[in-house]
Length: 580
Image: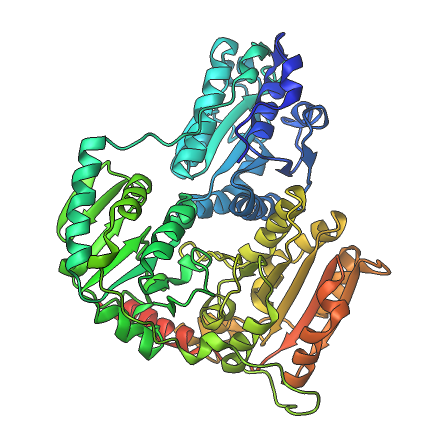
């Protein structure tokens, strides 16, 4: 996240337009590309993007753009999305709701009718025809941590700064309503010479010291304490503090499905993915037999816990969150985890700490590549995901779609530095295609030189396949595996294994790539794999691994096959749905 003043702002001490002010602030916060679609209420604002060194992405539709903004923010730290009033913003609101649910900082800028039209209640296009110009902002307020209606030039700069700060600190979307007559209104440019203060407010020192003292007492009295890292450790940017704590203590450390990527899985103390009854037996045994589980950024949703199947007593837990901390049944509101983690690391007495050795699951070792001709059998879920462990490289960005991929990846061991992007809580199928595009673009904007790898189900792919166009248009470096298993597998295992509503039309997936701009494009290459040997051969191929651009892989798997974790979680979901 950028914290210094961009040198260009030295020339902005004179008044600047609202668009320039807003876009320069976004640039200062690390945004380099802006997703969205043009509409008559935002066109003038879009003209100012190039002069503020922001690239216009131009997605295929607003839903895809909102998914892409979500993925961009997860990699870059924050993102921006521009839509037009009513029709555009409502198409995007599902993606914004997902970002809110999953705590992703997206700045949603909506171009809207001028202030005079709003005041007079004119019956304009893109409205409900009832003169209410606040109805869409009111809808978005429920999935935004802050809403700003930029109607008064005297207040706009302050509104923008406050809203962007809240977006970053709360790690949730914000909504900016930008009327057409305010786009070129003037505000004080010299404010841009001072960056927005993005520092997290510190805990009250006395309260923090007390909480740390209580925690240390329980940690050092425990016989077999363990650490469980979850999604909010990533979302609220405490991974460095978490790493420092586990590297000093060497306590056995586990992650949840949403927490994959929060911990270096190459560490000796890494034990695997804990997800209640869907865990590997040795993982479940070590976590649930612990007399103290230290959870960092816990998010106990149904799919993140395999149907709420955790078996841990509250008496044996310490919970660290972005807004409070808990020790057993005691809650400490306002004592946030960052400061607590730092002091725990500084003050813990290693001589009084009991550390158990981790028993690592077999799946953490991965499956060695199949030798040519050695195994020509079909690719199964049980075989695939441990095999992916040996395909991934350090610092890859791995995006998995809701369905078999989201559950199968639990059995993949990540090399150091790998970021895992998933939407386990919101679970909007089709999210991953857009999110992958946004993540790859963030990687390109940040010059990070990381591969972006997407595992996408065929049913989910059909929802947002158009975003392949944007990937090709911006020459993004992406390896895209489409798992061709004939429909909505996750839904089949919840209900309706053979029901028609879980079927899909079979596409010519290679042909879709051509239609979306890949025909005769040297930066696009297509592959088909149907056996273990074919996939292993491809994953070892130097050209496949090292070339740039889009590598599109049709990966065929049996229709009725699913990861063991998905079956367990789906059974729990089905039982819950059937209960009265």
